[in-house]
Image (cartoon, rainbow, N blue to C red; front, side, top):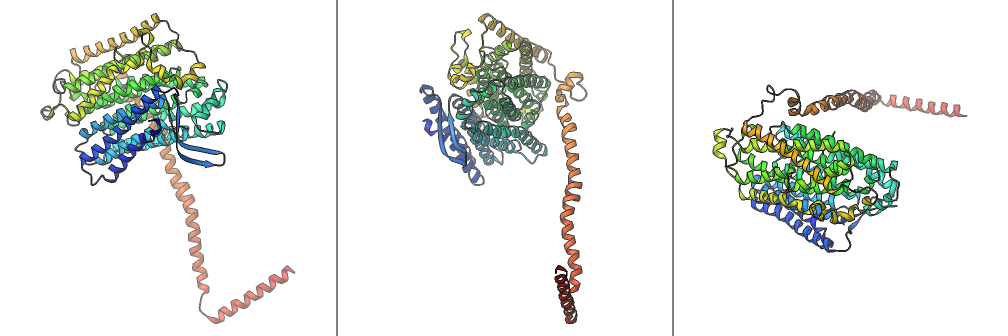
Length: 635
């Protein structure tokens, strides 16, 4: 089955071609069927690969597809790497991707661009699978750029709205900043190791000294790429704006595909980062700052999708914090659990928006628990999971990261726990404002309220089950478990594990740390309940009713405005200057000057063509005399 891995990206590519070429002729039923079936087929093959790999003695296979780049000493094959890390990512991308496709058949059913939407979704899955499967940095970079392109197409899917088109452009441009760092890193990797193949680069890197300046530079540049793709400070503002796309797009980008690319790339390059502790320190600091800042913004947002968007940024911060302290397994564990509960929460939010006739402001909701029972129950499971309450999946993955952070830096741990409190508060705040109390919308909205169709609720139920039980793959030894995930991923992180200290907390300390984080989440949940259910508090108007930190938080600490003032406007002004003076007056003036000079000269010389034979004889004699004079001068 492993040798058939090429089928995994091929199926979504075929779906893209069929739906893309037949977008104006195929009926919606066929489009939805093709779009879903191709991803399901990829999931089936991925499942077979996973089981075969799990039972095989060898845990890493390179599957050549074709000879690609060969020029002198440069040989870069187009080949796929199948190992525990890529096998798990295949299941996440195709599994969650399939559920999102099924959900989209109901959510986008009335949209005029239904076929185009599904073709873009299939293309997105194709490029993400390339990114995950590539056996070298160049193939990974193709997928990296591909998901950036597809995010632009999907975020700006409703491009007739200028703000949506601007959000798509913003995502594309900010990702290009990070991509430049990744691209330079690839060139530097080839220069240093004379290869871009993981199987060649990593063993060579393992023999280098820890703290080598070249490794620090390479990893720093790779991290710049991860910052852009996974929305970390300072390149995080594109991700909340990505809510402009249809809700299934938000779920796909935020949960299963694009934003996890940076985490995957660092996890794949773990030995490089382990041997660059200075870079890991920066990764941890950036992750910590991002998780806290995004959580502080989320606590005051009133748009249900914006709350979830900043939640994603914050959770990605946790993953980077885990990577920064060397908890590669813990960070990837959180990638898996986050894919479950964040896809669930976004699709649940889409179900609410669908029922509310496209209303996204939570202040205009309330009392939806009875009208949308399936949506409410499944979203509550997702909320409990993301809040880190046992025994749901988020508890195990988040606490594994926090345990490693505690052993590495006590101050970082304290800030991360406060961030976890914020997470529990803003998530239960979202639930209480949406589903509890009295309905605050219009009478037309109230009359329209109904549970979503089966095509939308079934994916919610499946994701709720995964969110509840997903933590079972990583039960720690303190609870008597063997942490299956750590054992399965051990071959990927084996070299890094041999060169870094492992978690050595005693069980008593682990119990105390878990009790503190769970206690903090429960306190935040109870405070949210008291404020938004018992007191029935409704968030104030953003202009007149918010002051101090609340106003700063609601306005995202004016970071977009700061970027606009310090970067966008000066660059625009400089661009206008270059256009008017350098481009238009200088370059265009020079080029057009040559043209005008030739025209004016031709007007003058044209007068010599008078048609008088006597004048031509005179000019001929004058020319002969001039030639004779020149000849005599030369002698």
